[in-house]
Length: 417
Image (cartoon, rainbow, N blue to C red; front, side, top):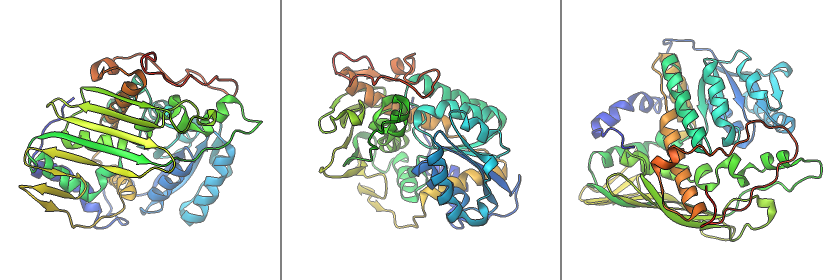
């Protein structure tokens, strides 16, 4: 629901600790807490490998000491990549490389201080809960759930982390881009007046898909192709378009109250692509009455458009670098790598004893994206309150390699979620 409104001055002051890191992304002074921190990676795909490199490879005093993935081949390929890239900061041994469904618990229990959670999103709530229970600081990729029970679990874990003084930083890296931070601070301070409308887009071509091998069970095939199964990815609005929706929530200081729209499966119709849609177009209404068009698409051969637009009573802005209208402005400051800055913010918080906790923030953006998916899947208007209260869980209580029939492609007018 609506967040507390901050002036631009207060907004920038609250961001000062992270802003300072942009001046010196590698070295830190000796401060509260240990300068030597052990990092564990859970989920060794491309994003996880990149996150470990951005974290351990960019900040002094960090070592990667444990890794875990469901699949041994992904674990080994990631380990080879990181060993070559991190040099002496790579301190993973054969005894601290884990595979299987319980690999995450073994990484958490290996003596690490910080865990990086980058397994498919359907696993995120359980992985976060285990990490917080064990007293670990966390970097977790977005999204953080695929359904309402998962969102509520993440919010609860965030509260537990707060009580324990743990830090949680999420992979919504636009919040660590100076252009976004500066311009959104100005928007929240009234630079474009009251925001009355907007749009956000992530339209692009198709993504990777691994053809099924004869030896793969249903479960293995689905997890290796997790993008195409809602119980694992949440579908495109949740897994990818959340970045843009998060920017809108951030700028408005609120979450949408209702959603209405459409979507479908027009190009990726082969069963190899699971049961997700390939396009969505949904209107989100915010508490002040602002209506924002949310649009995303993954279809080969189509034009790419990724970004946001906010329209106010005094002007408009792309939220990322410019404002047009009465208070025209263009950001021209430095633009350090936000994928590194988010890790710098986390480690600084740990070392200074001033926790950051982004669990609720990213959980609410995840739920906003779930609203987009649900409105398209069902063909109905859906509200924040009804979805937040939903008990519908997409993730099986227990998992093992074996049979798992693919759920039907959602049919608007008949599907319930």
